[in-house]
Image (cartoon, rainbow, N blue to C red):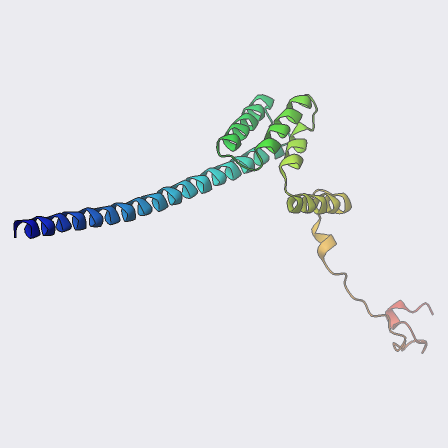
Length: 175
């Protein structure tokens, strides 16, 4: 009987150990999923911070008269570092833009160059449209250009009551 009790206690212990391993395995699985979710969330936040930094550099570069080259240089360095830290796909591109900035630092249009390099294809197309509009209409379109011209009918059915001819009225009659 002692052997049977000993055997059942061993089975209970093995059962408890198995149950513990199952719970441990489930906990590990949950922990792995939580770690994966946190990593994805961190990656998403880093990517968003790179996008914010790109917008900031674009906005600063687009100011034609207020650009401080040292400040722009620092912003480009920070963008490059942030992109490399977050393993952003465009990290090499930002490094290249930084190199081009340094090569063209003394060009008066360096801000426009940076904006051009950072712009997406869609943004570039919109900027082209804007430039065409400005070229055609000037920097500040006048209100008169957008008003419809007044319609003045010139109907041959108008008859002058003074001379009886068609095409004009008494006020414009030459006779």
